[in-house]
Length: 340
Image (cartoon, rainbow, N blue to C red):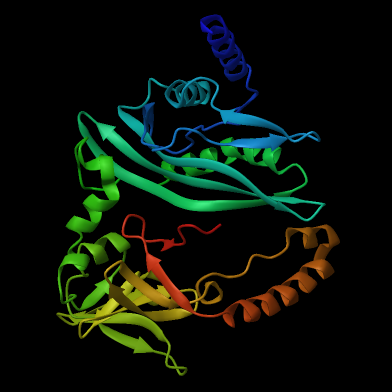
C-alpha cells in the first residue's frame, strides 16, 4: 500500500512538472523618449491571483499555463534596461501590477472570443516617497481564430503602451508612503475634497485634480455662449483687464453648487452618488467613433466614404441607451471597468 502511494505521488509530481507552459515574450521596447528620465523600474506585484490563465493553444487545443519568463520584477527590469540609459535619471519608475488574467470564451467555428482582464498603476519614487502617475483598469476583448496566441502576443504590446503613456505624464504633486500605495484608490477617495464635501465650490476647473481637490481658478468668471446656447468660454474682468478661458480647456465648471463636465458633445451634468461622480449618457456623446483604417488603402475617395460612414456610425452610437459613466478620480478618465 505504501509503495502504491509512492508511485501515485510520483506520477502526480511528474504530471505537474510536465504541464505545458506558454511563456510571455516581452518583445518590442519600453524606451523612454521623454525628457523626464527614470533611473530604473521597480515592480510591485499586488495581483491577488498570480495565475495568468490556463488556455487552449494550437489546432489540438492543448491547455497551457501562461507565465512570465521568470518573475515580473526580473523580466520588467531586463526589458527596461534594454533601451533606457540608467545613468540619466534620479527617480525610480514604479509599476504596480494589480491584475492580469486571460480567459477564452465561445467560438462561432471561425473565430473564438478571448478576454484579458488588465489592471496596473504607475508611480514615480524618490527616496521613500511615491507620486502617482497613471492607472488603467479594463478588460480587453479579442476575436481571432488563434485567440490564445493573439492574447499572449499582445501582453507586451499593452504593457508597452501603458508604460509609454505613463512616461508622458507628470507625476502628481502629492507625495505618499509605501502604505498608501497598497490600496491607492481607497486612499484617493478618502482624501478627495469633492467626494467628502457636501457642497461643491463654484468656479472653473482646468483639470480633474483641481476639481477633486476643489481648487477652482481664482476670481469670478462668467460663462459666455454662442447663438446655439453652447458655452464657448469663461471670462473674468479684474482691474480693467479681461482673462478668457476657452471651453475646451476646461475639465468642468460648477455653478450654484452644480457641476458640469466638458465632453465631446459639450458640457454634461455631473452628478454624484455613493460610488462617485458620473455623467448619464453613452459612448457616442463622449468619444468620436474611430474611422476604419482600411479606407486609407483607397486614397481620397475612400477617405471621403470613410468619413461619411463614420458620421453615420456616430449617429447610431448616440442613439444607444444612456447609462451612468463614472469619472475616475485617479486619472479623470471615464471609468469603463469591466469593459473593453
